Length: 502
Image (cartoon, rainbow, N blue to C red; front, side, top):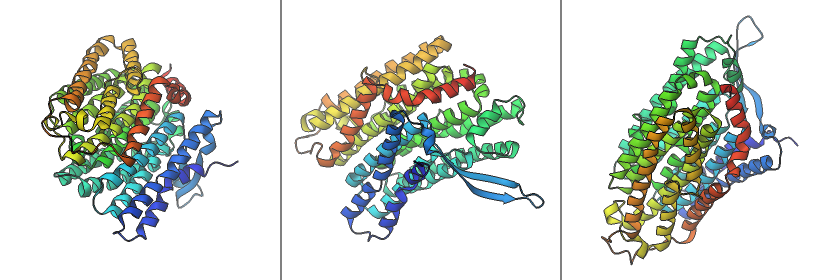
């Protein structure tokens, strides 16, 4: 059975929803929301089918597709002078991120049906375009195609923030665009130099070329290109001090967009560092491993300490994201199996936990018109179900055993303790601070002193249960049965370790 068309259908399936929405009148709210939600389902079902295909012992390479796409020929030769092929593929790591994207996108569509109050047609058309970009980023098998999908994620996100956000939405949108645009420019320069020097943008071929001592790039150029990748994806992750744009987005963007942004878009930075940084430039990554570990610990401590002093729950979660992305850097810098696996676990785990917490923040803001901690005290009395899920999400965020956060943090730190124990010991202060800021915020909201009457406030109801139950179930599943992630990652980890000489 030929499965090579599956990935193309998976990535571009939201186009069908965009076409249907384009033909609908913009005033019919309910049908637009239904179409917007239904358009995310093909990608969800196909991604789960790919996961089951792997679990049944079959090869993910069955889904790979490679077609001739762009060819410019020279004057005196029949050989292509410039060739970029249309190449999509799946590894275990890519599969996990595609499933994560499809799940969070579907749940975000449900959240948008709840939170978006105006111009639903434009919102869902941009949202579905964004989903195409995200799915394409994680399946692209050459750098040009990756870059095109990467850029496709920027424009819809800019408009979704700037049009449907809160009071300072335009400022947040332009901050997002400027920082990410500069990161994209650096990434494009790296890709063009690689293409000019090697004649290919195929990721697998570049990985093989860079491991060859006779590769047509000097050691200094390789290091320069790796630093360029570190900056480009460091903006996206984000790495301190390239993080200020992200704080504005997390506070000003609508909840459904923040679910996507914190759950998926930030993970493109981690994916790029792992797939291209660690994959194509392993020796350069190893040379700067200590610096990357230090940056990771700075992220962890900086985010944790600033989260502890915030008065707005959205800002607590924004700084929490910076802190948790530090754990990704710590795991990668360890350059061993435990560390890299912990980093990848953290990418998936934080995607689920942040989506859950930002959805609950959206519910709270919609009900109370505030996200200030002092105004949300005593929530457990009036909204016991929402308070319970918030408490559970908080426990997952601080790394409670039995939840996904524990597995990822434990493995990342285990990896770093093997290589740079003194730095890992410093980093554990961040883990303690994480418990402090999460408990301060979550317990303050659920059981703190009540500054308002919650008796007239509606608890979770109807479709609002779907995102919280699904996300919580996945967080617990990964926590108690990590093999759902570790088994697809085995081949990826073996390939990375082989490139590192381990």
